[in-house]
Amino acid sequence: MPWSLETVFLGGAAAFVVLAIAMFYRAVVGPTTQDRLLAVNVLGTNTVVILALLAAGLDQAWFLDVALIYALLNFLMSIAISKFTVERGGVL
Image 1: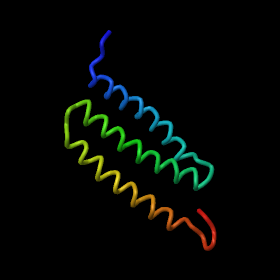
Image 2 (image 1 turned 30 degrees about the vertical axis):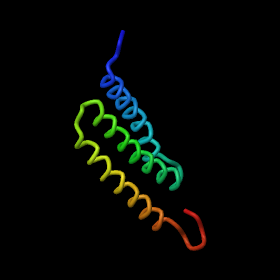
Image 3 (image 1 turned 90 degrees about the vertical axis):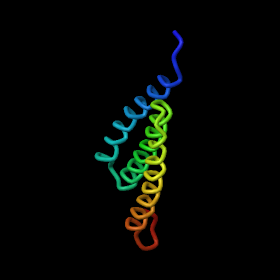
């Protein structure tokens, strides 16, 4: 059964959505602040990967523009949260 490349990209995007749901659970229930921070960062990265796979699978280049902007916002959000959670002399 020959699969087209578009089907593979869309299947990969669906798999990443399932992984994002599992990571969302960790972001909500995470026992420590570090777990939650890391889970939110992974969710942001996962979203960028999903958007890139959708861009390739649906042949829509504007998804890549949205993914790039979201990646930049995810980076800035990680820096901002890290800055506000660091205690004096401590790490997170």
